[in-house]
Amino acid sequence: MNCIFENVTKNVFVLAVWDSSWNSYNNCYFIVEDHDVTVIDSGKLQHAKYIEEALHSIGKSVEDVSLFIATHGHEDHVQAATLFTNAKKFIHHNEKDMIEYSEPEQFHYELPDQGIFRDFECHLVGCHTPGSVIFYHIPSKVLFTGDFLCFFGDPLSADGLVSEGKELREAWLDYLKDGGVSKEHLPAFLEGLKSIQPFDSIAMCTGHGGVLAGDIKEFASELLKVGNEKRIQQ
Image (cartoon, rainbow, N blue to C red; front, side, top):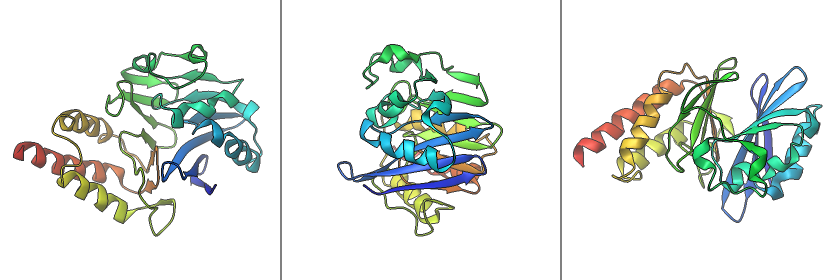
């Protein structure tokens, strides 16, 4: 199984594990601050050894993970969280009845619909799953979008896993223009984009595939423009 482990910023790391059964990279993220590690999303249970190896490569272990937060409750975002026995685990309460985790009582279902959670701004977007959230890490200015806005099944940018991703941005705009987001889901998607737009993000970390570096606010604005035009046409 192919995996890539890279810096997003100085203390934010991405682990992208290739999942041949889904033909996609599944991503999880580490934020390293002094002796504590925060993990956002975890991959499937079979990805656990790659998480351990990645942490070891930066001088950390699963015991150093004090906080785990999930963008939503699908297996590829929560299952390997079983590794983090010292961590408090959080997910939105709308995921309580559908979380794909063997011991759901380990989770705290306390993420806000909108507001500050630890060092993050948290926004419920409700696309993909009822409890899908996005996180903006205030100290690093990194945005985590989960599967609300991701590159599932897409090839990485020619410039690598973490890049400006010009072709990925263009592909998403084309996808939206071509009706990739259904009429039914488009209003909620546009509301989610509006929650992203105010952040002064320097990187966008998604649930699958490429991590975008550079001007994320501009990308969100372009998507909003195309999405609103599409909505008027419908």
